[in-house]
Amino acid sequence: MKNTALTSTHEALGAKMVPFAGYNMPVQYEGVNIEHETVRQAVGVFDVSHMGEFLIEGEHALDLIQKVSSNDASKLTIGKAQYSCLPNDDGGIVDDLIIYKIKEETYLLVVNASNIEKDWNWIQSKNDVGATMRDLSEDYSLLAIQGPKAVEAMQPLTSQDLSAIKSYNFVVGDFAGIDHVIISATGYTGSGGFEIYCKNSEVKQIWNNVFKAGAGYDIKPIGLAARDTLRLEMGYCLYGNDINDTTSPIEAGLGWVCKFNKEFTNSKALEAEKQRGTERKLIAFELDERGIPRQGYDIVDGNGNKIGTVTSGTMSPSLGKGIGLGYVPTIFADINSKINIQIRKKAISATVIKLPFYKG
Image 1 (cartoon, helix red, strand yellow):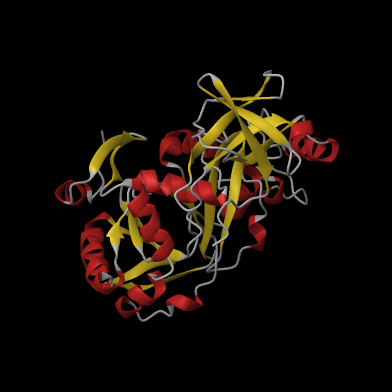
Image 2 (cartoon, one colour):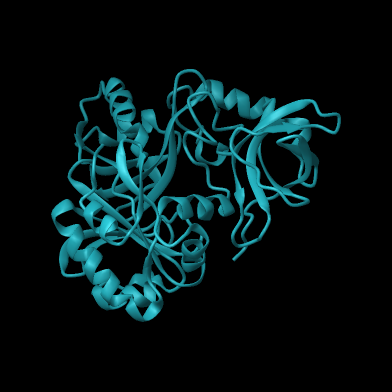
């Protein structure tokens, strides 16, 4: 089990540690609901240093990225980031990722922790253009400072204007006494804030200064369990749950990151799928009565026939009701359609809704 540079810090804070994607990670400190509410109302800090970072450089860097990713990275300018996915050859998704344009001919790809080796091998297998690839995952740490008070609380730590960093933009600058860190706004919680990419040797200083600066703003460390409830309230896909090697980006509702003005892996088949429509779709649903939908629960029709599976589900701390995502045949996917979630021996009525669950 790998540790992050902050593992001992989390343990000293009394975090419950669990194995996640090969890392020893904090799943919660005080409790999921308290931590969730902290991010929705104030400011919370996640150690997400388990994420993977690849540097793609050289005159053919963009050529490689355009070939392996579904979105159009040629639209990126320095200081901008883009959500995208890596399609496989069979209609599924190798991973979803964020692409940062650091400078001309230099891009940072941020990938999911559980897929670092798989993604690296996949991209490398497509690199017949001679782009330079470097895996920085073991050397870099990542903090996500999230919540409506994040900008105000953290502004004293940097000469950069944090309020000026728009969504999916970033700057490279000073933060918490460290020069040349990436400060980006690509949050996964729906409550604002930003992320800090730094070297492992720098993250402890940054963590300590962040908590000093946030002392008057009810700042708390937040674990992966609340990260999951926060992202689910926004309807953001989680790789391994809602998307994987067998789910198509079109049926997952990620057609908006598939740009067919260029060729990329399996683009012809995905374009055809988008034009003809998919047989199933990823839907969002709210339970109409008490209950907690969990990953793997059956979705059934009014006659009790299985029509799909819950891919992510929880009791929403913000809404106080059961919410979830899952795949169903397209005929059941219209907004306001009625479905049922099989929770133990009872089929609980649910309504298909338009995302996000949490409106802020």
